[in-house]
Image 1 (cartoon, helix red, strand yellow):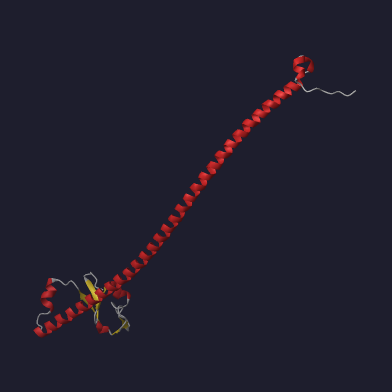
Image 2 (cartoon, rainbow, N blue to C red; image 1 turned 90 degrees about the vertical axis):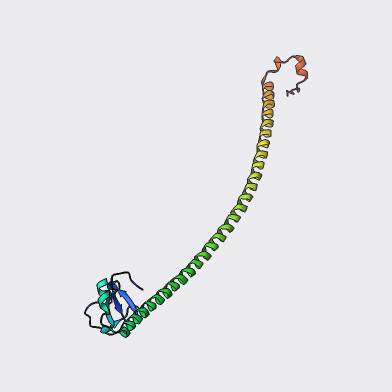
Length: 195
């Protein structure tokens, strides 16, 4: 990949790396060799590594190729264009690979989202059906409770009536018989005494 730094270490045949990476791989200083290209892992000899300014000054541009024949200048220009063409091709291939990897990742995530969405919809449908069933069950229970309440009220009413009748009868039986008039005695049940 091309770096935007002012100076890069240039590794032949076609790889440019930044100075930090070159130092990290032992290409920038005095080393004992053998050198290996950090990009393609090819073995390198010492002269294959050179420091190059990718943004040269105007003075350097005006004197760098002075005195060279047009053939040498064209050869240098051709090699420079070939280098940049190779770099751009590799950069495009890397971007395409990254794009393909991202597309596969996005497709996988999309499948997971669709699966989660489908599971969520299924769960919502099941819960909606369960809620409807529970609402019907609640209505049935409410009807039963109302029926039981009415039944209890009716039984309480009957119990109150029975209690009232019982209390009246108890009061009547607890009065002495002498208090009753003869007309009242006729309606009462005769008591039998044993001698």
